[in-house]
Length: 300
Ligand code: GRG
Image (cartoon, rainbow, N blue to C red; front, side, top):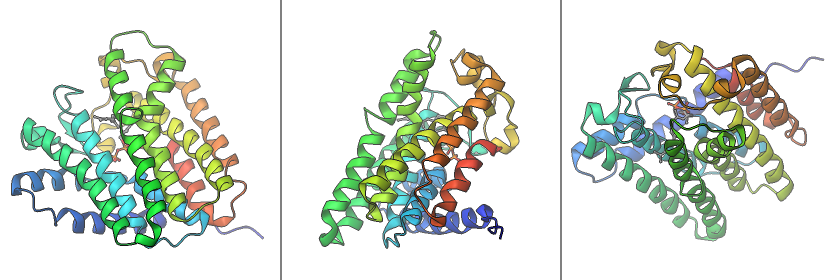
């Protein structure tokens, strides 16, 4: 008998709505000055696929965990991601005017407000995690591990470090191993942490954690390759941001190093490896499987 096809669209819609509602609740609470709170809300609620929160929830689902506080972790990941986009768009970095189909934070507000909104979102993410953990003292060790995994991925040895490598490499020739390292840190680390945090919240065992790490590493790389491909041949109106910026800045990307077709083939291979890593899981990993396929078929 054929297995009914997993409905990714419905899964994404439902999880996105839960994440968005919880983000609304969190962002309506901070006693920040109104202009700062507005800028934080503006960027987080501007849209976005919510890939990291959904990966976190899907990893938790795959392990069979009904973790009560998974939404707190999912929202913390999205706030960290949103802060990184606000800072990435600043004049001192990529100097982008459009993000998620809207004027970037520093354009809609001003540069200082955008810097501070990013700072405050990063801090609020960790406050959300520590607050949820403090409410469950019996699970303190698990929460500390989740916080540690996310902090390491977001910081100097992960996303922030990758951003620095990326910026210093601009205009310079970069080879494939250098590109892979840079992107593993800049984009891959938070994607990996999202999956690992979801699994930890569901009390995954070490075999499950190891397989999910292989899944996440491959999905992270495929995601980045797809992003580079979309920067060449994507539709700006669907992406909500400009295309062609990598070539304009002479940035080394998968298409510039390997060509467009070889990049697409490599992304597919990565997704096959991600799916192979999930063979130890039952059908509760269907969302993770469907997300892996979506990562390279997406148009935005
Ligand atoms: C400034 C500390 C700091 C870090 C910036 C993630 C990042 C590091 C920069 C983003 C630049 C970029 C376009 C990277 C390529 C892949 C990527 C992270 C795309 C944006 O993420 P999506 O596609 O965005 O998940 P949405 O808007 O859907 O959330």
